[in-house]
Figure (cartoon, rainbow, N blue to C red):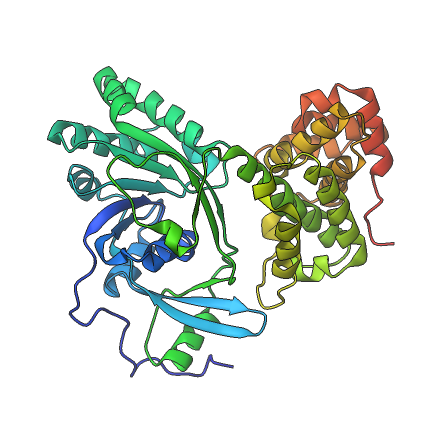
Length: 439
């Protein structure tokens, strides 16, 4: 209904001559999630005026061009079940094309730069060519070493399990290939901070752009939509300082793994069940799927199983589960199941298999976790045209073309050879095939 609003006569969002905060954080991976999460937390810290972010794009420069024209400012549309709330976020001091390695080197060589944050994919950690974001970061750290600019923290803000260790291993491997002296310097001067990040951030639409113009009275070509909930848990050292993110709601812990598992199993695990069962049952969004009693029961059963292995009181599992139901049920956040369903072989390895293994080790059947694997098999088997994304797509399609238990066995091999090597587990998964289809 806002599409007819003309933005031509409205002023473009900008700082109107006011200075941006000084750059003390460099970010790689400028995108919607970075802006709804790390940039938002930084803007809400009480010392935000001291902590500007220079955000570099990944593969495409478009986001940097649009944001640079707006002096780094953007509108966050917090989309609750009862309406929208609008906020201008000003923590991004510079929005920069990722190809501008000279600017990256200069910023990392500055003693005032204290932190590098990353929002990259698992594939990026495995990609070590000269033009990858991590290779660019290594060159920037080399410039810091040469400038004698002192220690720095690298903070991974992605959904990769053990992201601090993964980032450290990848960066040191690249550094060793460039200069063994650089790798030695990094071991002494670069700390790696692990995090668990969480905020549903759907894709911005033209209607969202028009909505900001209508409701706020200015043009913003790069607004971001996010749910009201935001969570950030961090573990690690910041040798050159950091914003007071804890005053903005972030949590600092000694051991990140239990919190990672809570998110991977409860939030992400539920998402996988809803993505596969929901689409098989005719739903398109998380809100639709969680309203289906069959999907909801499967999620609750998996949560019961996972909760047996999330025992730290500070995890507050009952409250976390209740918050997830409220978040999933928000009908105004269009979180599409087709998007969540991508990369099943990778995701199930982190979401279903650990819970299944823990349940078996505890002397239980593991049926709730096995059901997640079974419904994924039903989903890819139904997608005969190959209408899904997966790093092992060709192998998945080949396995799905088989029949009966042979199909179950072949698909299980792609998720977990250990699971596939247990005939009892394969039989259990096979018996659960078809139990979450529309009935």
